[in-house]
Length: 255
Image (cartoon, rainbow, N blue to C red; front, top):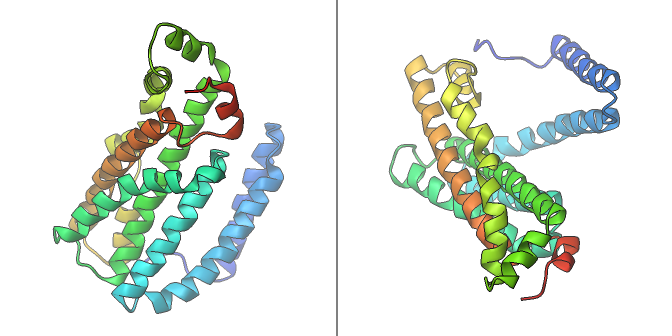
């Protein structure tokens, strides 16, 4: 007995009530996302049921766990490119996420801090990939919003003799750190305001509080490194014109 939720009628009732609360809040606040909430909830249940069946097999071998992590990364890159409306630049989006994910996972597993096993690869890789995907999307969307709202500053910088790359970077880099606010706040308040997934997961799995704390601090600092690297590389690629939605690309002056 781990104290974690078990599949059954009590869980189903709790899920339905929680979803109803979310929809009710959205309707009351006139957010216009009630359908999105329901679709997201149903998708999460279907996907997790399917994934749990696959993971039960995948976890048995290191190579299959790595392959599953690669699939997660591919989906993350595709999702991030979609959020940025830049699917044509998918390879560059994937590269910016990999710039954060790859070195962090290499340190975590290469240093021996975590043993290279299937049960360790998938959750840690999933957390780091997910965090980097979100940071990439936040950084890109904020950068593109700035370029859409104030393209004149790029023109002004070019008129002063600055090159296009520097003109774009000078405009968007002032907002780069905003994409890192969630992970910084989560790291600052861990144990005081929140007990994130890695900590709770180890406890529910029967581990000690010390083991849970070690797992959580490793994940949080890994996320700080991965997301910071992803945001920096993403901004460099945006400034170089490698990642740009079509409408932003058309608004910006030619090189």
